[in-house]
Length: 196
Image 1 (spheres, rainbow, N blue to C red):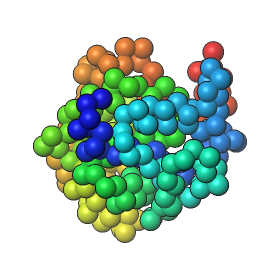
Image 2 (tube, rainbow, N blue to C red):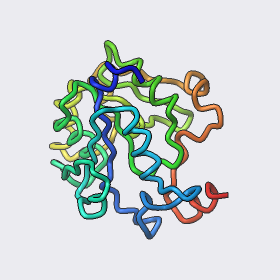
Image 3 (cartoon, rainbow, N blue to C red):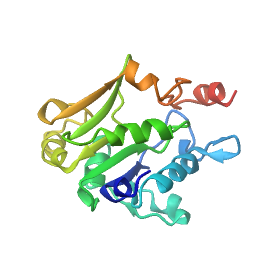
């Protein structure tokens, strides 16, 4: 990735999830001998010069030599996005959750390349928005804070208030050729399926 991109975007990995449906920490499930978290952290380290982990899980992630920042508004992914943006030293952040088993390098770079003139660059698939593999600017802080303080934790309810670029299915397919970029692992059955 070009150097200027590394300097102008911070990587934010949300690590605060409780993995209730899985019954164990999804971030540390192994695929091909590598944990899901290590797959994501490896991609983020090579893509961004600053990487932040957001969530009240410092003890679980202490060995990775990355700053772990507790949520300003605990309890939701939206609060995690806000915390990452608030603490970032760059104008933009690229956010992902820590349980995406197949993080896509080409797609990440493409989404980052679209940031000029936008406050949010968000994949929009047939299943809806993918707010946790997306890019945000600090202009999102105000609208997100208003939502959080009103008790609304929907991760995309503020999109109409910012200048958003939605990256549609056909456009995504150029970079996500195997269709795995947004595969999610929530249950033991999901994990069994993707492990095969």
